[in-house]
Every structure is written in structure tokens, then in C-alpha cells.
Length: 407
Image (spheres, rainbow, N blue to C red):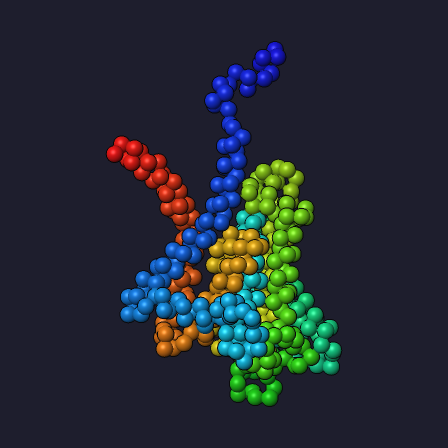
């Protein structure tokens, strides 16, 4: 009976999993989480370089221009000159301003992804937060700065949470796929914004009724600038809010019961339900939290440097969709999302506004940005292929050694 109770004793030693194998497996899994995004970015930039070369430009010169246009070269100029009269310092401050928004819209995609949901509605949630922040910023003109800014940020985050929560509620109650519902909610937010800011709309400015634009946020609702000239769009304290959001994201997922349950549902909803987790509630909570991140991004943009938004701006805005690429490249982690947002922030500003026209045609540069974004999403989706390329080098080493020994 004792022998039957310990069947592992009959397993030959060479078939038992060794500790070294388990350690190597863990290292490989962690390395894959780092190698895939790095190789993804490298492959995307290589493909972009081929396109740049096809247009008759030097890819190295173009990428160097993007690097300098994003202000990344300022980091290596020691001692640092923080005066934004210096063009490099100004470019970096603008890159960080874009990074602030990308961190939050990236988290808006990353958080529900950990729950097994794909939030395509970051753009709509961003717009809803921006609209609410504009309304709060135009109103309550007699309030002091701190409560006015906090009210605008809080109201926008709540509005984004409620907007995304609709998709979570539909998923939980009717099984409606969140991709479809969030896309539809995006269009409702876009058309709603055009109505609200359009001619005769409830939020159109009152001093120029011919212009289909919102009212201008009053001074008391402006987020203070700590780097640069406020008149020239300096870097405001919103960057610290975005960094704090990364910390909150990590804490929720790794140090709370809610995060454990969200990750459990993401791994296997049926097993999570069998374990006593209310899967439907987690769907609603995950989408609401993601919408709060996106709504917060809209508030920081409106109260930080936009201060006004028009019908054409509503149509042209695409920043929420870029959060998908940020989250995928960052592997839906806090650190990865922050790094990916910084990379995309530099790419976005460096190509559209920071790149010298003598280096690369600005009209082509904007398309280059979109192409690299698309390639990153494509390669992230093909992570098996990327890992195959990475692992193939290991297979070549023994083959080369065998060929060398045979020779």
C-alpha cells in the first residue's frame, strides 16, 4: 500500500523534472516578456526604414531627426539645460506631455485586457472625459485653482468610467462582445462631441457663435506648469498623475483581491466562476476602471494645455486608439506601458512637430508614425513568430559546433 501511495518512486530518475529545468523555464518565460516587445519594436523600425529608403531618404538620417525632434538627445547633454528656450529641452517637454496622455490611454486598454476583455473604446472614453472636463473648466469660474482642477479631473474620470461601464454591463448581462459595443460607443461620443461643441450646441463658446468650438477653460481650472513657459505649452503636473496611475495599476493587479480576481477571470472565466468569483461583476469593474484611466487622460489634456476643443478636433483626434499599440507593446504591464508610452510619445511628437522638414517631409513623417504603430500591433499579434526568430539562434549554435567538429 505504501508503494502505491508514492507512485513517483517508480518513475525513473531521468524522467523526473529537474530543478534546473524549472528554473530555465521560468527564466525563458520572463525573457520572452522582455524579448518580444524589444524585437517587435526593432522589426517595426526596420520595416519603417525600408519604406523611408524607398522614398529616397536615408533611414538613419530620418530616425536621427526623429530622435532629436523628440528631444531624446537632451538627456545625453550633461550638464542639463532645463531652460526650454533650448530647443532640445522644449522638445523633450512636449514629448513628455504626449507621454502623459499615452500612459493613461494605454492603461485603459491594458487593465481590461488582464480580465480577458479588449477595450477598443479608449477614444470615446477619452472624449467623454475631455468634454466633461471642459464643462467643469468653463463653469465655476470663481473657485480656487486646487478644488476646481480636482473637480474637473474627478468628474472626467467618473464620466469615462460610466461610459466604459456601459460596455461592461452589456457584456455581463447580455454577452454582447465588448469590441462591438465599445466601437459603437466611440461613435456616439464622437457625434455627441460634435453636437455639443457645434454651432448652437450646449457647450459652444458664447463669444464667437460663428466658430464651432467649445468655451475656453478659465484660468482657475488650469493645471499648473512646472517646466517651461505656460504660454508656450509647458509641461504641467499631469505627468505625475500619469506616473501615479501606473503605480495604482500595479498595486491593484498585484496587491489587492480585486486584482487577483481580475487576473483569474482573464486566465479562465469558467474556473474563476467555479472558485466563487463573480465574473459578471469583474467585467463591469474592469471596464469601469479602464474608462476612468481614459477619462483622466481627457481631463489632463483639456485642463493642462488644450483649454478648448472644436468640432474639427473631435473628428481628428486619434490618441485613444494609439493606446492599443502602447498596451500591446508594453505587454499590459505597468512598467512596459510606461516605457511604450514614452517611445510612442517621442515617435508621435518627433515625426509630426519636432522633425526638421529639411530632414524628412512632414507629410510623409505622419504616415511613417502610423505605419510603425500598425507594424508594432501586427508583430505583437505575431509574438509566436517573433519568439521563433529569437529561439532559432539557439538551434544554430549546436549545428555550427557540430559542423566545426566534423570539419
